[in-house]
Length: 214
Image (cartoon, rainbow, N blue to C red; front, top):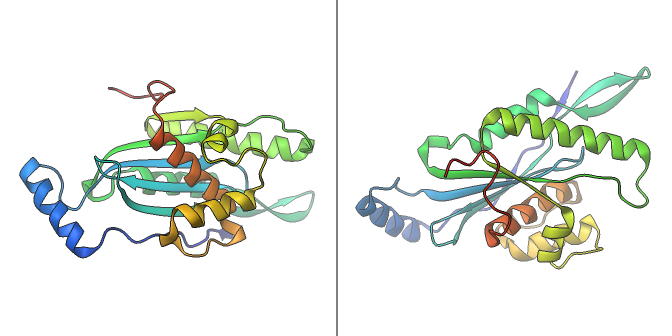
């Protein structure tokens, strides 16, 4: 079996002078130098989905962004090779994005997009997306990271994308996060994950996250 993991796309962090100033402030406050204070990981659970990672400081200023496609692996189904969810790769990606690398992240939260049957969506497609949602939910719970389940309508309304396609989501991400550069069509799923993360960052209206301790 051959894994199909794409190289993640990342936007640059703050400029060197700004980073140095924040390091001084962090030292005075006893905080990790050069740290992003809060990380939100938005997950589009579709097979062509992925993760959008949003780093913010305590004031809500952008520290960095990244896009990661859902890891997939080649399997045989009905004697034909197909790409399917790679649970081991998904776990590794989740750990890499939520494990507070280098103790620079003080708070991590996951936002998982809720799934359900949609008009015009085939039975097989609905089933596969449901499988992906279940896999991601199980992995997130196992990671013990606080999480929220957010309906597509909620984050799309916030992004003014109700009724629009994934392409529109990708273009909106390019507009809102220009440090990413041109986002290719293959990153439309992770782009929606990033918009989901941005929704959670901007709104705190759904109560405490599951698994939150305070």
